[in-house]
Length: 240
Image 1: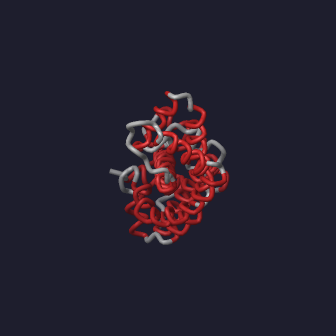
Image 2 (image 1 turned 90 degrees about the vertical axis):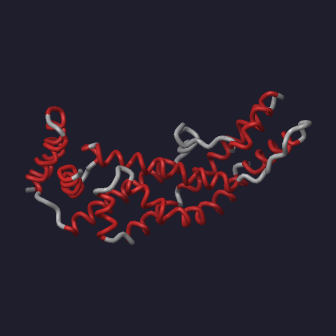
Image 3 (image 1 turned 30 degrees about the vertical axis):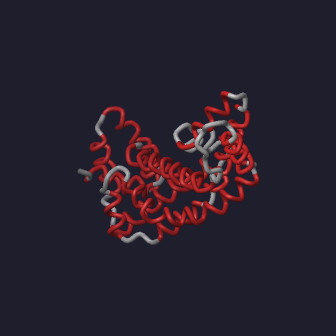
């Protein structure tokens, strides 16, 4: 049995090249059988814990935000005129320092997300699990948005405020805003940046989680354990 389970990922890759996903799913179900409710619950929770942990790890690494165009934090929309003006008057380096420091603060905060997601996963009922498994392709991401956003904000905000000071973001952004505010005839901007970075850090985290969710739904190679193969093979077979 153990050897059969180890062969399944290899067989799935072979079938993927010549058969439909539904045929692959049928092969998986034939090999492993239909999952029980407990297995469905454990399998989905395992997938979500892997996905959210990976997202948190990726974004908390150096350049996790700064080097990722999909989540990179730029000047706030209302302050983009600040950046444009600074660059036009020879203060481009100051603008670059602001952007780098905002992203470094978000990277510092992202590592705090793991226990919040783990707690949300533990609280899932069988109904939650079923609705996520057979829901929209971003059903898990939407669940986490509903259940963790407030906790993430509360956890991220003090870390970001500390980090903004540590990496110089508060100083740089205040300098940038004050320099801009001295330009004649411009509308003044608020130099407080922490709320904006907190919001963007959380949004970036959910962007990564959505990608991980889609990956495990669509990519057979992402189902790295027999339990994941069994549960998501059942999902492939029965999804509408």
